[in-house]
Length: 74
Image (cartoon, rainbow, N blue to C red):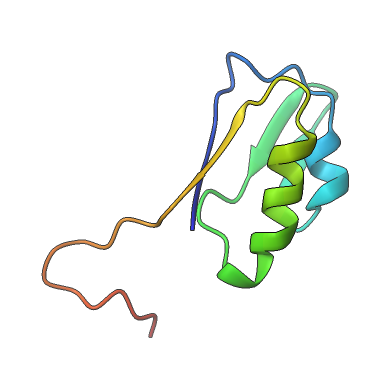
């Protein structure tokens, strides 16, 4: 899974932090930090975070696997 947050749209309401604290966190009062490629086990929380975002700044997609690799983790 790959997450993209439009930081120009994000207004730091923090709803994503409450929904998926292992993936999203606020640094200071307004700077959002996040894991852009969390494990699939976090998918339900990440989907809840995206749905909770008042400005719809979170997009969830598939992780990009480089050509010639299997995409498996070591």
